[in-house]
Image 1 (cartoon, helix red, strand yellow):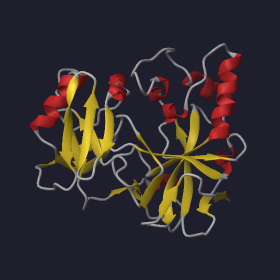
Image 2 (cartoon, one colour; image 1 turned 30 degrees about the vertical axis):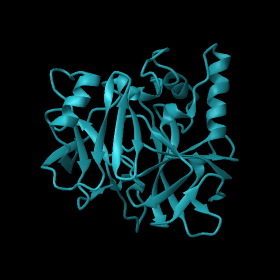
Image 3 (cartoon, rainbow, N blue to C red; image 1 turned 45 degrees about the vertical axis):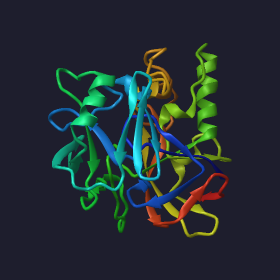
Length: 279
């Protein structure tokens, strides 16, 4: 197999960045989900509540994170700054230590996205010393894993063949195919059979210096129904409804892709075209 896409999402639920090369860290690809939008109570806000978050594009400059929206001037956030006020931010039931990026960022986000149930929006950064452990439920003996603001795991791996299989079913129903961006993966591979990833245990570089542990099928949510450029939902419920009917992992719900952790290769680089071996 080979890698055909590498994507990072520096701000959870905003638009992603396609890369040619990416550095592997225990929390995921470098800069992945290091920032998050929260409400006044510190609860995470995603496209589940505000699909138009997909309209905010993100780029990484030499010294700043830059957010852009068609209706506003761009917003730049210093990458190296760590003197912001601390607060507690919540992802599901996890309480995370975070840094508040300030009023300018809050005004910008609230201005382009609007309030959420009467609450303004704020931008927070994951506090580097804090460790948010991956839940033990799907880990193996000896696994030690942590992540930043991702839903639960540091890496999401998907397969082009699985997307092709899904799109064939969508076309048979008279629906339009969907792009891989609907599933917001970090690593996309080519050369496997459809949904073969559901039987993998590890994914390794040919030289053996990088090893990912495949640990949990990714149960999908309504974000898969959101166009990741326009923020619109053209066909409510799809492709999620089709994934549920396909029953790809013989469990209730719609599944696509696999959540993974880093077993070996911290600081190593993955690149498009790299060969990978599954076991």
